[in-house]
Image (cartoon, rainbow, N blue to C red):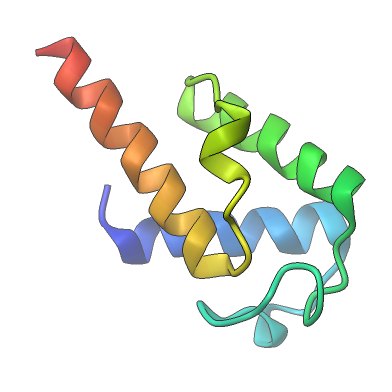
Length: 87
């Protein structure tokens, strides 16, 4: 899955879960400051991302996540790990 497609999925998830406006979500959007998510929101997002990817997300993989692009990069990494494990 390409980064643009992952960004679209993450954006859609943010809109659905947190009733955000799609126009407010950019790769540079900061989760806590710009989108006003809190730690419970972040946990909800991780749970939904785990369901979508079929992968368990390790807490350390998301500790440094600050922006939407960071989420996209983390999901891309998870998907790449899954592909390499399946081969």
